[in-house]
Length: 188
Image 1 (cartoon, rainbow, N blue to C red):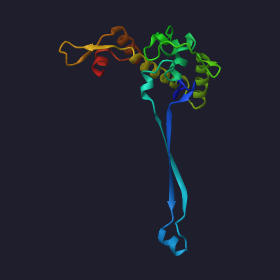
Image 2 (cartoon, rainbow, N blue to C red; image 1 turned 90 degrees about the vertical axis):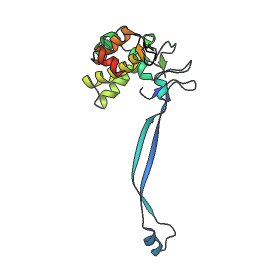
Image 3 (tube, rainbow, N blue to C red; image 1 turned 180 degrees about the vertical axis):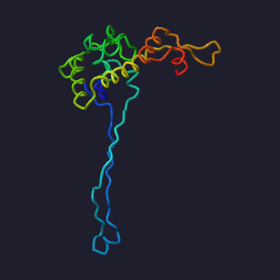
Image 4 (cartoon, rainbow, N blue to C red; image 1 turned 90 degrees about the horizontal axis):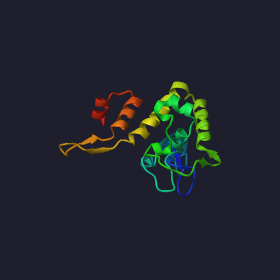
């Protein structure tokens, strides 16, 4: 849900990558030569795996007939009661409530609706210890990303900077994050 999205080629395409580095302990070349070996032997001593997001741009935009990351749609398709537990303002929101998501006519991936997938994602996160307050915090963080996308900016009076034009969206973001308007405006 967090790293997969619908693309034009695949409904459930992984949008992240992994880099695997194998680490070896090599035999001293002089000792190998003394033992009559042409090449020193080596033994796998460890490995290092790095996971990285390939498409950060998919968070804020996607091509026609594609979707952003599944977790956005799953969260927005959750039951109203679950959405209200995460953030009061989320209760009546849908895909079109957030500019980063928008309209889609697809609400099933591999035979399951986004709402059903939300339940599966929630259960999977609980298996690895992300439940209760930790789950709510994670989902609220996703809401922050979505709400940031609803902010609009325009030029300030000097023409050198910008101001937030969407005051209602800013107020919602402040409520969600528990930050007052002046500090939020300063941070943005």
